[in-house]
Length: 343
Image 1 (cartoon, rainbow, N blue to C red):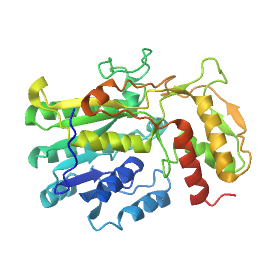
Image 2: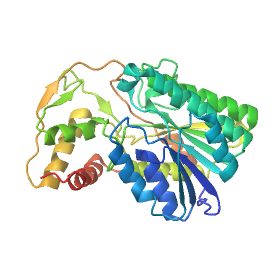
Image 3: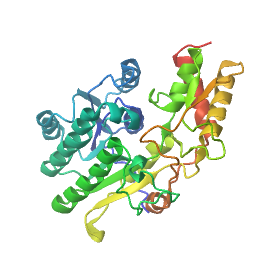
Image 4: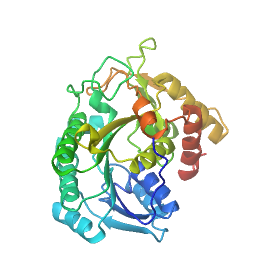
């Protein structure tokens, strides 16, 4: 375990810097005086105003440089590496979402496969001290054994999104092996919090409630066999990335490549999470909030449970996520009510 702190003389390249995780991580590094180069294509997969609001928080820092660009554009990305010579790269630019991948497969191949290949090529030709990249808990597919451990078999993805993330892990391992690129993949488990992604269920539930519409719950109304999710608060994710950045893998175990789960290690029933959100919104608005609920069958590509073992992460950097859903959802609800000025 290392207690190394971030080196503020180094340059940190964050792709997807206007995204949820990317913006929070960039802000944390900027606050510590690090030089941050942010890349984002500012696409309209969800509300561009929210991306702009995150970006506005970052651009006030003198040590922040923003580049509007797409990692799928190889020449532009190569130019960025040549000009800024980043020491550390965190690749968070990706087309997210399981259900969207069923409707729009092309964008997943462009961003998650071609884009990531371009990142690896750039790190090959402009060596970096550490590449950290986003994988996903979705790689575990329909695995029945819980908690999910990094050594589990992950060759049965149930969505194209999951396939692209599994591909990223294989590609990174290969490049680490061939070109000695220290790389760490992070399997994120249902990240939530203020300024989060509107396509995530908890955010959509709030939107539906304030629009006077019912919410859809994809568990067949089966409370005995409810869906379980390992909800992970954004600050815990950022702390985990920050700790891992200064802990690149070595060649001692073959290729300098590792994969870690970052999850709450405390799965919640989906219905308990919904009740906690109702309570948090009630506190934030000063009135009782109760969702009108419609129960539907589980969607293709969804899995019954996501539950992370975080033992490896703790062994490596002495950290495990610990924010409760009550605390995290209250912060989200307070932000939501203020940001959207709902009464």
